[in-house]
Length: 214
Image: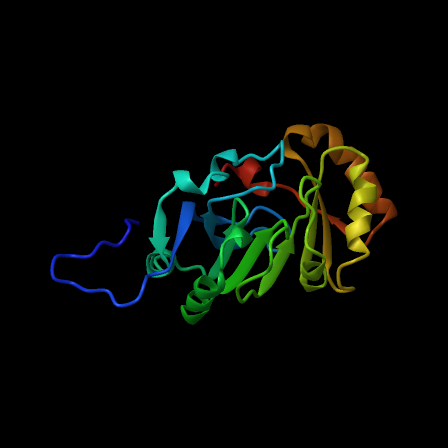
């Protein structure tokens, strides 16, 4: 994708909405409820949550990434056969996602978001994956709207922290525990044991890192 430019003699009466995009790609969803499905990922740049173990820290500074029009972003997505769009980050809710999701839906996409919930919710979402972080708490109003609560487990104290948010989401919200990648070998056994004792939780594995896709 290349940013749109005006040619000599052209006029533009209204500003064109743009969003900073670190990357976009067609792949297999590797985590959570929709694991294994073909999905087009749109990774918006910009994040102030500051997870120390974040594996896409290069996404934090939105100013380092190009901005594209909504038309360009959606046009790129429609080049692939899948119609599941996953908007992630960074923290995607640092941006107004209303126009993006509206255009994606018009193009036949189901719209999913992966968010820490630390910013107000914008956009029309078919699925909200809330992944709260200790570094910046989610806003209370997003908790009952989550379809999926995915908690990254870095140490054993995170189980109690996960239950704190599980008590605040809707009764039908799917609950997932996911080992932080660098500590996967260490944390997977206690997660399995915890789920066996608390079967409303499910295990989320970063499948894409095992099958070597984006």
